[in-house]
Amino acid sequence: MEGDFDRSSQYNSSKFSSDDNDDETLDDKEIDISPNKDGKLMKLILKKGKGWETPGNGDEVSVHYVGKLADGTQFDSSRDRGEKFQFTLGAKQVIEGWDVGVKTMKRGEISRFTIDSSLAYGEKGSPPVIPANATLFFDIELFNWKLEDITKKKDGGVLRKILIDGTEWTTPNEGSTCTIEYTGLYNEKVFETRNVVFYLGEGSEENLVQAIEIAVQKMKKGEKCEIIVKPKYAFGEGIGCEKFGIPNDYEQVKYIITLKSFENLKEADEMDNTKRIEQAILIKNKGTKYFKESKFKLAIKQYKQVLQFIGLLSNYDAESKPKAEEISLAGHLNLAMCFLKIEDFHLAKKHCDEALEIDSRNEKGLFRRGLAYCGQNEFELAKKDFLKILEIDPNNNAAKSQVNNCTIKIKEHNQKERIKYQNMFEKFAKQDREVR
Image 1 (cartoon, rainbow, N blue to C red):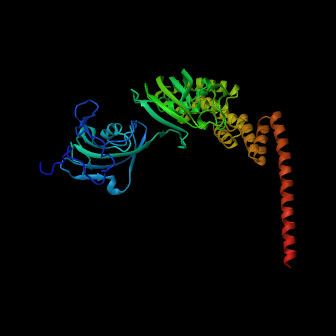
Image 2: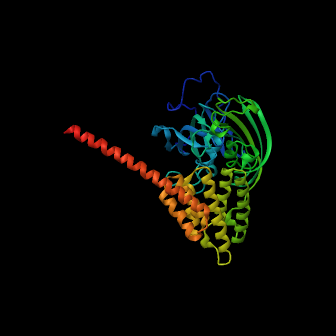
Image 3: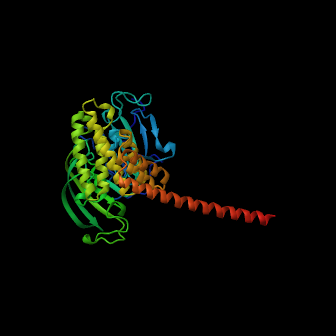
């Protein structure tokens, strides 16, 4: 066909070419890099890259590209737009041919990829630009890549590089049983190697640093990855580990992790109401164990899961609803207690409110909300809750004591306010006299 795009022609576009590889010998033969070695993804190196490293799944790469159809028609170009294109490898953000091809490139490399429609836009194409069953030709220049930031805050505290892809698509969920092997390194020297079985979300019970759990929850079975970890997600900021010879001023550590296997905790929507209640009770008991051990953050995770498993109370029938309400009430009350312990009074009050929606006369709910109000210096509101308890149970001595405490605090507050406003009045009066 006249005007056909010659994939083996000498590359001479000034948009990509450079004179800095005159001394390098280029192989003008295409390489079959297709997953099944069936010629559906061919690569021709136009300019060799530097070094030996190539990006992997999870890396964010930065490229320029020009895309053409078989007849030479250009349909897309990042060069023409004047900005590089960034995407995450292996995240299905681009066509499969790109995900496979770019992983074979080195920094600074320019290559031409011939991509069969099965690894591009398939039988349907991408109208009106890409016809059906179209073979595509891309000239891609790889500039750089950076490791994937897998922290929720995207603060660079845990950067991941996948070394070996996993064999399945599913990943562990909260509470799943995970079996891992990992090696910890500081300044490229091994300080720890372990095989561990643990519940995801409770890794601290097995002395796992936070970064390992963050990584594992994103891994697939059989996957091996390397993570670079800042102190915040390892032993703590300004806190080293004497046992491993890591000083307090360390900048980062590295972990190489293999997820050998995992068994996911069954999701709530996969259970009937009876099973939900049974699972919620088991999780609540585990939370209570952690609470008694003063492991409040772990207890909070468990009690939150209790509420997730119970779900909406309106979904329960007349027979099962009372038990669901009982467990949901306990979950909110226990969360309120945990948040009081860590002095998060806002969340403590929130869960008391939720508990009192289920049972408006619940003494624990009123008492704990009163304590939360006290923590927020809202002594008038706190006193009202403690007085409500005495309406329900006039002999509740703890509530009586808190009413007295609130009365004292309210008087102290009012006295401070009087002094403050008195001083303000005297100040303004003095200024008024000076003006006259």
